[in-house]
Amino acid sequence: HICNERNKYFSTLSNKSKNAVVVPAKNDSNSVEEAVVVSSDGVVATHAIDFNTASRIEGSDSQIVTVRLEPGQVLRAESGGMMYMTDGVEMNTSTGGGVGAGFKRFLTGQNVFISDYTYKGDRFGIVALGTDFPSKIMRLSLPEWDGKIVCQKGALLCASHTVDIETEFTKKFSTGFFGGEGFVLQALLGEGDVFVKAGGSIIKKELNPGEQLRISSGSLVAFSQTVEYDIQMMPGFKNVLFGGEGLFVTTLTGPGTIWLQGMPPQRMISEIARRVPSGGGLGLAIPIPGMGSGGSGEEGGGNDDGNDTNQPS
Image 1 (cartoon, rainbow, N blue to C red):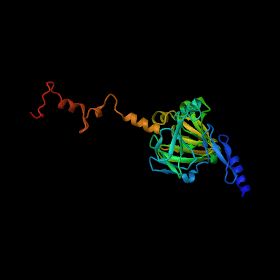
Image 2: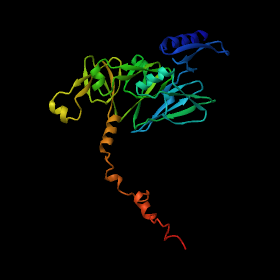
Image 3: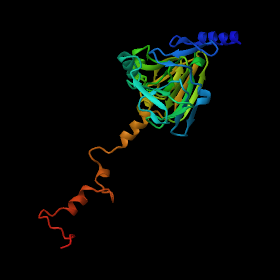
Image 4: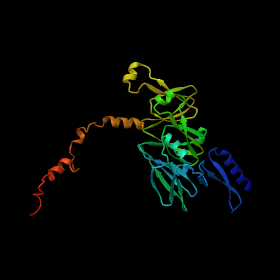
């Protein structure tokens, strides 16, 4: 029995990523070594979260994720995303490794600060997280993708505490300038699972070696590290002027896996902004009953002499 337990420990040790440090801890009851996981910024967890049984994505068009925490586990999430947490759950907000790490996350579209959730109790606690925009949420296990996934800026919602965020720079100046995603993408590396948000329907596509897919700028959510990311000029003069897709389209070349979103947030925001009246349009001048417009205030209190005919004598 002792040999089997030691074999399990060394198997766990060999499977950990370079971002996580495994520290042996002595169990006094049977003197068998167990592994605790330490993140790159020194946050310690006694054991990892099994998201297969501990997480649940709820909702349809605008989704949330709930995660069950046991004592000793750590969930790392984007600051400001918490909907609720049950009794016994504690939140610790930090830069996750200093000012440099916070600035790096800021470049990739995340907040400078992150929040670590732990449970200090006897059974378990629940943390619910929502998005800052009506979004779908998808879960990805990094070991299935060789420990790295490249995402659009600001895509991460929450993850295992052993997952690190790195800057992924575009290889060409033209790609960063015209590709719709900017010069810096978000690379998620490490051991564990990540929850990524996307607008509208999520489409997953597998690309064969050399297969190319052209997509509209802003539709990209994530892709595996074997996919090449570039741009291509839109063919046809009329397509450029009247097609509505602009001068360039994003090209993705396989092999690898990509995820696309049907309603990019920036596209929806642009459409809303385009329809907002400028110069104080007619909509701002129409009084709404019961909402206390300025005109009704002047009508009710317009007598400068202070006489009010409605007051009893």
